[in-house]
Image (cartoon, rainbow, N blue to C red; front, side, top):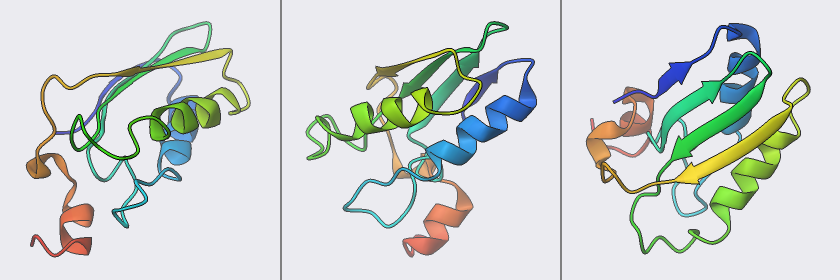
Length: 109
């Protein structure tokens, strides 16, 4: 599964994705983009950003720290007017949501 991307500003959206790729679950040596934790990126014409993400499980040890860290990094991207992160567990994350890069890195392929 890949993220749903809603925007006309592809350049700024690529900066958003690049920033997301700097965020890691500390227990897994793969960034949250490649893990498939980002479900949706919605960047409107005013550059207000909404990102929907999940965690590997509701009881993930970084549930309290990772989402605020991601949201803060997104707010600091030049050109982003505002950033809001929504945490969801629907659909539940499954390892099949990882990219091939992540699956190779973690030995699933």
